[in-house]
Image 1 (cartoon, helix red, strand yellow):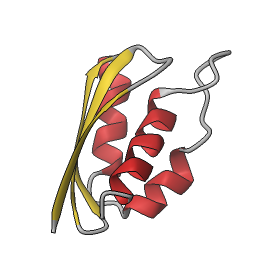
Image 2 (cartoon, rainbow, N blue to C red):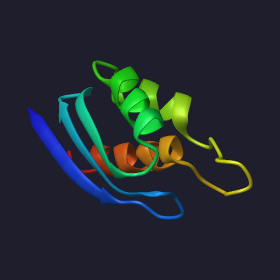
Image 3 (tube, rainbow, N blue to C red):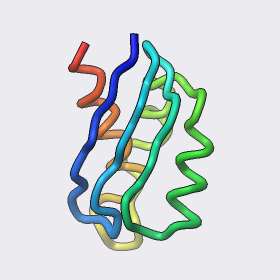
Length: 85
């Protein structure tokens, strides 16, 4: 079953994260804004990964002195995607 979410980020350079998942597997992630190389890299790394595995790896990562990061915001978005079930 396909699931999608458009998540408006908070506290990062990226403004939004769009996610498509099939069941419990991430199919595609697209960041809007942010550091293109980093966000494209993170999106490529999580493609094909189980949602719970991505959350476990990304949650709590900080960007410098900020309390969050693009990977952390992705983990939060994935948690919200899970509750759509």
